[in-house]
Length: 358
Image (cartoon, rainbow, N blue to C red):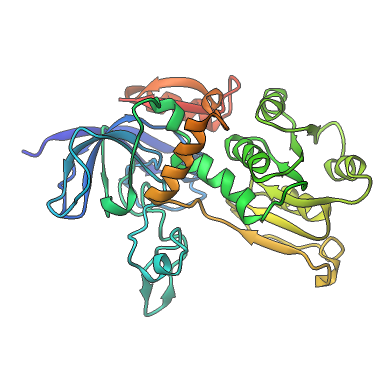
């Protein structure tokens, strides 16, 4: 009988449970990773609620930190026992999308057209990381060795939220001296706030309503915080910018309200950088969009992955220019995964991110 492992499995909308599954077989280009630390993402909550469809029986999770347990026969440049991370996005490196430089969109073309967000495989199209082991495809394109002087929790944010949040700043093409607004200060928004500062923004305005999140935004580099329940955030931003508007507005929640507020906060010719996962159609208001004549840019980004992206993010952590350890507010064992989901999905007890260790 094949050896088995514990895994968090999607059963149906509203139910992700701890179950047992066979430990995966390793193909020539794969690597089997023994998970040492992982976490729960807001996207996992969309899956739990049935807002993002995945197959029943799929292991959830896409943020792995671990140790190489077994290497595929064709994998070179790594050794068993080595500490590694892999991005939430695992590009093949040889697809059309990868060779065009858009690694996140690694979906194969079909007779019916191109499939978006194909680079996100863990917990989406293949078994994910909330388990004792995970199989990493195309290991040579995706495994990034973890420096010995970095802990699991220091690099835990690299696979997804750090990469995603930073990419919101990068895609927005923030320049030195820019003013940037970041709407929503959940984990991704907080990383976007950090990334905006690293990109050269000299004024960062963080929008949320949870006091602990606004305080964390200040800790991570926000110059101003706006409580959207206490005042209209667009009016507050216009006041803070002397009526000019922001150069870049980053949307990090995925709602009509935050998307529209971002658009209304922009200066003429400004950029709306959208990171949120939307679960319904968006409407672009005529006035805020200047009837299509405002020289605005609207750009969307899926978390960049691959080993080079992970190496660069770990360099940022190692340099001390960003410290995201404070985002880990709760710790659970894998056996407590259902309890962890309940806490995270209902945003109780000031939770930002949870660390899960088998």
